[in-house]
Length: 231
Image (cartoon, rainbow, N blue to C red):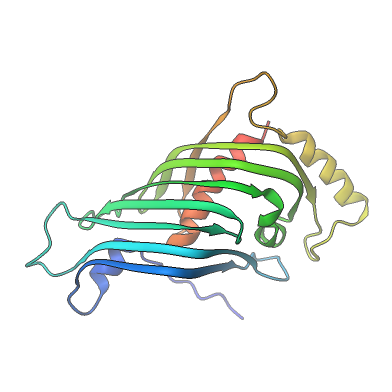
């Protein structure tokens, strides 16, 4: 069916667009689960990523002008298990009345096999992780209505990837074998390499205004990961 084009709001816009009056100091959720899917144009099935054992807090949901102040900061913070395995911590902070919807994002992901992310890598990037372990991903970046900019450290070892078919999620034929060889020639399989310093990545991503906040965060982080692993 035809794609429905629609501009998606960021957090501050959602607060201001609420039809009623908001005056909420904080909301906390425990033992939750978040599932995010995104269907690539050419993929048979959508990519999926999930987080379990979620503890999340949203602070300072104010649209009431009698309560809100110019420097009120909207805070979204969460702890969870990425793909039910690796620890993740995340926090974003942004001024409620910033017309650029700017906010600062910090966080980490630790101790998870790279293959745990295959449910989103295979359909959306046509790449399958055969080996590799994430010791830690640490990020700090600023986003607004248009761009994300920041820094990322990705500590990992034994990274080995395989190119899969665009239409079926398996590696097959000479083409995929050649592309797999090229792909692994282009990536660095450890960070840090033996007797070398830890490489850092730069986060830079141009926002797609038709995607929601969650997609914006994931793709911003992925931009820093990609720079770290590519030669």
